Structure formats: structure tokens, C-alpha cells
Length: 225
Image (cartoon, rainbow, N blue to C red; front, top):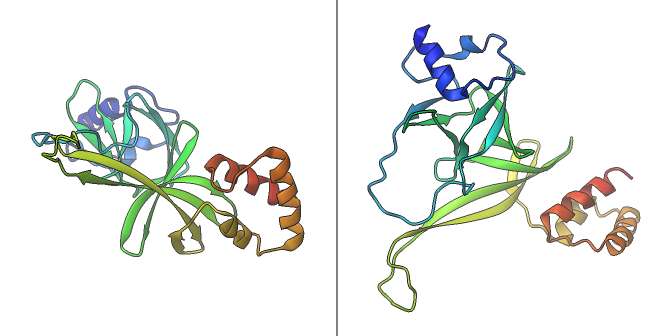
């Protein structure tokens, strides 16, 4: 029980929203819990940039569990390389890595993140738009750009490059999704009446099919007609 309380205090830093039987979800084995495990990073290899989604660690996350509990975790970030959320433990150099075994979703800065395993790909997605028929999501990836001895390139060290792309989840499938007119029309079953009203709305609001926030506004409009 002492180990459980130590892990909980390090992980949550005293910021728990609900504690309904939360201690029962912790294992007795060191710093491992049903929500993840802690470890130390080996940082000997120098690569510029970061594998993390956010530039800073001063993020707070509201974690929603499968048992409908929620708790707050500070100093959290998304490791794109590992597709895992990680938190810096208080007064420690170690990192706590969350798995999604008992987590429904994670909310950071009013954005929802979920984990899906599909077609041998395990990835954390940001939910851009969600309905009872589909979800539009944003996935993240990272690659190492090799250093170059060419003085015109000015890259003496390897460097992390971050990328994002869109996906659509329908039923049990996840497929790439492009922010473009044709993609939106397909979601509307190419209904000419709806499309006509949408085009008028977009013209009045100066919206674009290529801008994420505009696409959210567009979908909110057409599915509330």
C-alpha cells in the first residue's frame, strides 16, 4: 500500500478529480500501474528537435478511464515516436508512460486524444470532428532527417521532423482523409440540396475546405440543417 501511495502522489501531484476506487487500479509492483509504467530515458545520442508533440511540458491532461472516472495529470506530452503520452514525475528524472488499456481518452487544451489499433498500426489520434457515423482524426508521425556536411544545408546534426495527416474512422475501419471538397461531398452522400446550401454558407463565411477549423465549422453546419 505504501508503494501505491508513492506512485499516486508522484504521478498526480495531488491533483485528482475523482478518486472512486482509483487505488484499486494500481499494481503492487514498483512504479507500474494499470495505466502505464515509469522509466528513464537514455539521451546520449544528440538529435536536434524533439519527438514530442508539444514544445513545452507545462500541459495538464484530464484522463478519462473506462470506468468513467477522471483525474488530472500535469507535465504531460505525447511521444510521437512511441505513440504514448508521457508525464514527468515530480522531483524525479524519470518518465511515466501511459498505456490506453484502461483509458477511454485524454483531453489536453480542450482537444480529445484517443488510441486506436487498426491494420497492425497503433496510433494516438487527435479527434477533429466526431459524429455517430464517423470521426475525422489527425495522426502524427516523426522521422529523423540526417545531418549533412554540405555548408549550404547548414545541418551538422541529425534532426527530428514532425508531420501530421488526417484520417477518417467509419465503423471499424480507419483510412487516410484529405481536407478537400470531394471528401466533404462524399460525407454528405453528394446530396445536391445540402451541397447547394453549404456552398452559399461557405461563400458568406469565407470558409475553405483545406483549413481544419473551417472543416469543423462546415460539418457542424451541414449536420445541423
